[in-house]
Amino acid sequence: MSMKKIVVVGGGTAGWLAANHLGKKFKDNAEITVTLIESPDIPPIGVGEGTVPKIRQTLSSFGISETQFIRECDVTFKQSIKFVNWMDKQKHGSDNFFHHLFDAPDKFSEDLTPYWLKHGQGIQYADMLSPQHSACEYNKAPKSITTPEYEGTLGYAYHLNAAKFANLLCKNAVDKFAVEHLKANVVDVELNNDGAIAALITKELGKLEYDFYLDCTGFESLLLGKALNVPFIEKSKELLVNSALVVQVPTKEEDEIPPYTVATAHQAGWIWDIALTNRRGVGFVYSNNHMSDDEAKTKLDHYLKGNPSELTYRKLPMKVGHREKFWHKNCVSLGLAQGFLEPLEATSILLTDFAASFLADRFPESDEQMIMLEQRFNHVMGYAWDRVVDFIKLHYCISDRTDSKFWLDNKKEETIPPMLRKRLQLWQQFNPQKEDFFSKFEIFDYDNYLYLLYGMCYQTKLPPLSSHYHDKAKAKAEGIKVIAAQLSLQLPNHRVLINKIKQYGLQNI
Image (cartoon, rainbow, N blue to C red; front, side, top):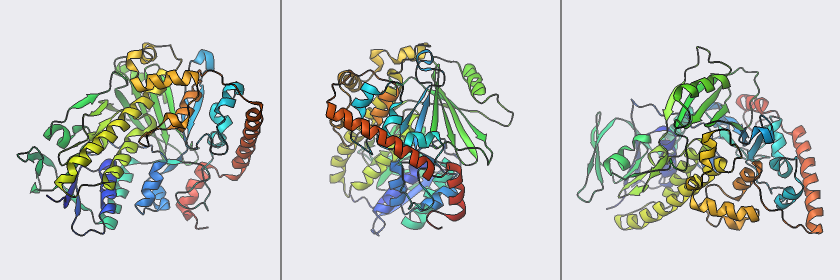
C-alpha cells in the first residue's frame, strides 16, 4: 500500500506546523496529497505563546517572511526566561532571579564555568558568561532594523498570539504547499482488520478515506488514544503541577516590553508572564494537591494587583504525561495528542516542531517501510520526552526552597528520574561537559543545563585551575563586560524595534 493520501486531523499550532512540514516535503510530488481537517466547533486552547530559537529555522524553511510574521501575530522577541523566586528568599533575597538565556554561555569564549565556580561569588552566572544578560535587563532587542530576517546579534525566539500564528501557518500551507483545508467534525473512526485506521466518519462530509493519519486533536487524542487505544503514561509522580488559571491582561502602547518570559515561582508552582505588543498572557500554574483552586485564584489576584472586572480567568486542567507510543500502525500523534508536561520552557511547541520535522524527513512510502520507521520514531521520541521530563524536573528538584510541602515533595528522590539523578551526582563532582549529552535528540542540551544549574547556584566541587586558564578566563570575563556595554548602546529598545518593523519591515530602511 502506498502512502499517497495524508491527512492531519486537528488544526491549531500543532496541526498547521505538521501540515507545513509535510506540505513542504511533498510540494513537488503530484501523487501525494496533504489534507487538514479542522473542526469548525472546537476552538484551539491557544495559550502556547512562547517558543525557542529553533522556530526561526522552521519558519524560514516554510518561506514565511519574518516581517509578516511579526506584523500579523502580535510578535515580540524572546531572548530568555527570567526565573524569579525559584530560590530561598532568606538566602538569596526577595525577588531573586536568574536568566536562562538563548545565547550559548561560551559564545564569545571558551568555557568560563570553572572560573565562575571559583571566583563568581556575588556575580550571576549568566551575567559573567554572556552579554545577553544585560541586554535583557535593559529591555534591548536582539537585533536592529537592518539585521537580515531570522538573523540576530543575539540569540532569540518569539512570543506570539497562538490563534493568529495558527492562521498564518494555515494560509502558508494552503497557498504555498497546496494543503487542502476541510472544516468538519470527526465523529467516528473506522479500523481495518489489522487494526490500522481505514477511514474517518465526519458529520459534515461523511466518510473520508486516507492512507496515513496525523492525530493533532489535542488532549482528546481522538485517533491514537481513543480509536487505537494507545495507553497514556502519566508523569505526575515526577512533575507535580497539574492545573493552570490563564488570563489575558491588556497593556498600553507606552508600556515596556520585556524581551523574555517571566516565570515567577510561588508556594505550589509558578506563574508565566508573556508580553505581546498589546497584552500580557499570564498563567498561574499549580498543583491542586498542594493548593486549592480558590487559593490559586486569590494568589493570581494578588500577582495582578487585584482582579479588575474586565479580566476573565480560564481554568485549564493539565494531564501530565505522554502516550506509550507516538506512532501506531498508520497513525502518528503530534502536539497535545502526543502528550503534555507543563508550560515551563515552552516544551509543547518545541516537541511538536521537532516531531513533525523528524516525521517529514523520513516519511514512509509503503507498508514495508512503515514498520521500520514506526520503531525508529517511537524510540527517538520516547528518548526526547524522557529528557524533557528530566530538564523540567531539574527546575524544581535543585531549588533550595523549603517553604512549602510542594517544594519539599519535589526534592524526594523517588520523584527524580533515574538519568537525572545520575547526572546530578556527577555534576556535584564535575561541572557539565558537552560529552555528558551524547545524543543529538537531547531537546535541551549542555547550554540549557549550565544556565539552570548555576543560575540556581548548584553546588559543584570547586575545580583546580591552572594559572594559565585563570588568567585567560579572567581576561575573557572582562571582555564580555566590554561587549555587554557596547551592545547596550548599539541595540535598540525592544518596543521601539517592534514598532519600526511594523512600520517599515526588516532591512527596508
